[in-house]
Length: 232
Image (cartoon, rainbow, N blue to C red; front, side, top):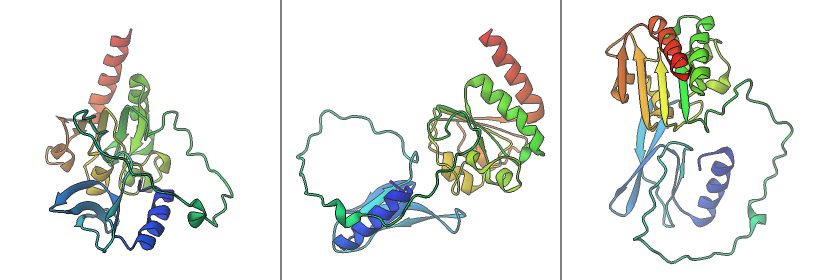
């Protein structure tokens, strides 16, 4: 995949095999016999469709959580070819000096079934308590837009998007998030997306399964309280 190790490995492998490589892919399709891949560009401000070139086999690294899990098709079969692998050719000279904790996140964003995320619509860092209270009630992870992280409202470990985590939960609740392309790239493959925003024209509604136009400062406390009542 398009992880640190994956980019390192497949970059070297594509050079050895003289093959084309499309990296950090968020969508993929076929154009005849060629791969047509979509990847973020210009810091996530644009999406490009690229086709890897080269005489050898074509390869692509996929961004983790950017794709739905494939459905098993028992009617298909194929022959497995085993190739000898010499891992000494890919030995890294890098030395890990330190592992840094991602902070106080109790539930990992990439593993969470439910994520509640907040954006600049929260207006101030202290208002992230509304997101945390709802997330705690739902057993969810707390996510955030890049704008709130850049503003210092919440640690980077919570950032969802092009320069943060790419997630694929069963339920993604976006609160006060307008829906910049950098954010959409990181969460648009979520199975169900609920967007809450005062602006009915916010781009987030274009990818939302359900949209609520309203004031998050009125909606979130009532929603949290209602869920607590339902849980008894």
